[in-house]
Amino acid sequence: YFKSFSQDPVHKVVVGSNEPKGFLKATKAFKNGQYDEIISACNEEIERSEDDSEYKLEAILLRGTFYLLSGQYDKSLSDFNQIIHPTDIDPKLRSNALTKRASLHMQTEQKDESFADFALAIEIDPENPDIYHHRGQVYLLVDQLEDAVNDFSKAHDLLPKNPVTY
Image (cartoon, rainbow, N blue to C red; front, side):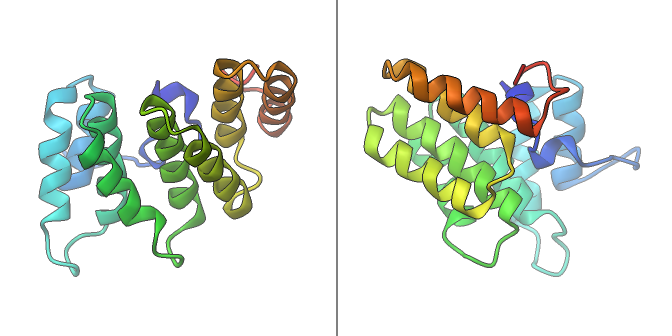
C-alpha cells in the first residue's frame, strides 16, 4: 500500500536517534514492520505541546492512514480533515491526505466525494504522481478505462522510474 504513495512524508524522514520519540518513533516502527506501535507513537507526537512537536501534522496523517487501513473510517476521516481544511498546510501533506480520503470515500461508496477530493488534490499539487495513480485505480473500479489509462500515463510521465506507476 505505502509503495503506491511515492510522495508520502513517511518515506522522507530519516531517523537518526537510537531512542526516537513521537513521529520519529512511528517512522522507525513503520520501517521495521512494527505496525502495532505506530498509532501510539503518533499519539505521543500529537499530544506534545506545539513548541515540542516538530512533526505533528505528519503524525496526524500517518495515524489517519493506519486508521484507514484498520477500517476505523470515522477516526481516519477526522485526521485527514485536520490536514486538508487549513489552506496554509504544506501542499504535499494536503494532497496526500486528500488522495487517501478519496480512497476512503470510495470504500464507503461515496464516488462523487472521491472524485472531488482527487480534483482538489490535483489543483493543490498537480505534479504529484500518486494522485493520478490512485485516481486511475478508482477509474478502473467504475469501468472508466480510458480515464484510467490517461491517469496511469500521467503518473508514469511524472515519475517514470517508479515501478508502481510503470
